[in-house]
Every structure is written in structure tokens, then in C-alpha cells.
Image (cartoon, rainbow, N blue to C red; front, side, top):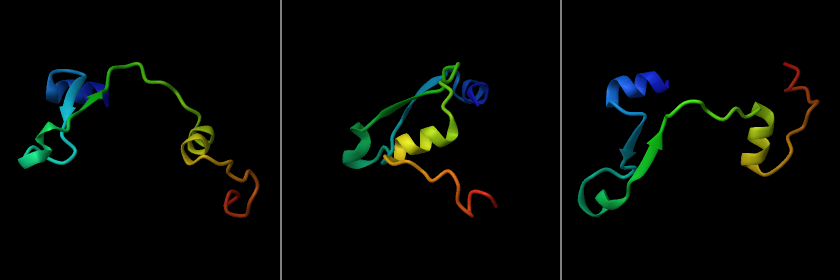
Length: 64
């Protein structure tokens, strides 16, 4: 992913305008950073941390 961003943008970092660049929204800018290496996060723990609660470990859905 980072190499693709670098090939397209010429940098690992670039500005992103979430609401576009027209009108009053042009001042809101987020810098996206695709510089490797990326932090590795275990899937279930990362989801639990983001959601703010513990996911059930053994359910019928988890076993399908």
C-alpha cells in the first residue's frame, strides 16, 4: 500500500480534504501518512479497543 501511495503521490505523506476544497471547507486538512513500517494490531484486540467493549469468544456465529 505504501509503495502505491508513493508511486502515485511522490511521497508517503499527503494532505486530505475530507469535505472537499470548495467554499468554507477548504481549510480542514488531514495529513495522511503511509510511511512504513506500520504498527501491527491483533484483530480482535484492536476491534475491542475501538468499540470499547469485549467481544464474546465462543458463540455460534464465531464458530461458523
